[in-house]
Length: 403
Image (cartoon, rainbow, N blue to C red; front, side, top):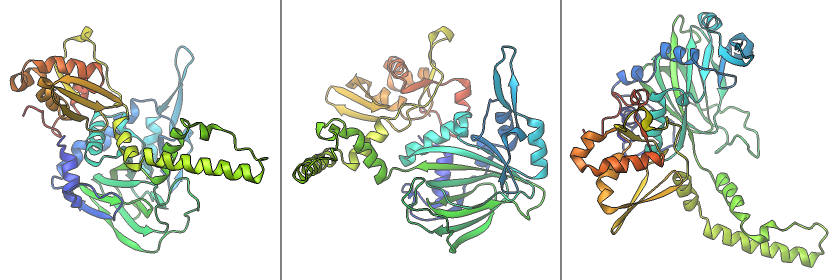
């Protein structure tokens, strides 16, 4: 999938040979700054917030660096059936924004097709799970104080201006659940400055940073952060713990009243079983399974009650693996393995490209078989019907597969 924003990020950060997440702080500017406005605008964000039932902590507002109580911006609307629904009070939101505040919407990609497609494209590019958070800061709002994140972040300024300070890490590879606290900021200021539309920052895990509009006067800042959930050795060990249940040795009680000889024998058995576990379930297997088995993202299910299947797009979280095996082709993705006849290979490559596919156009390129293959992939939820709403996430950002 060739996504204009992903290509822009790669060019801005000098990652033309692939992302180097976690290596160093990097900054640059999108070659085509107009993409920023195409991604999201302040009014589109406010419209998104207005039309959905949101709750804290996914939706939050801060003023002067302190988080406001949800009652300051959320209503509990009661329906005619007596059901309480949490809705954003837009009049109160306006008041906070006029006075200077920071409004945050976490995981905005679940609400907006453009952000959903951006996440999918970045996952295909980087091989990592990602989510998008949105930050709207107005007037002289101070924003957040110095803090660090337990994941790598790419920040993209979409509109307005924001002042940043980025410092080095004070603990190597810190984690949310860690063996030691990480409360003392580094004094090593790597970069400070103002971001403007199209500017891109890569902030590695553990790097201290702060951003706000103090002293910038009347105006606003809208930026998005793309958070990368990178796999760690701790995650691999947790995965091993799940596999350990298959071995009887690990399911036995650790008897604290055993004599010394029995304890030594149990330790020996556990040590040998652990060695076998590590040998059979390596980090490489963990990483491969992590990409292969994650389920496809939410999508509108296809039913011919509403009309024929005309346009489709691959919606797997990571690129499907296509293996040629003589007279057969295997497709592995989303925890599934599908087998097709070899003659389906051209259709599979087109349909699983990550780009929108019009089936009539595709039939003229790879043959009429593409329509049946598309039906199977849609039934198995590796592809989804390209509804007008989902299509809007690709328009102007990802080209049609047959072009």
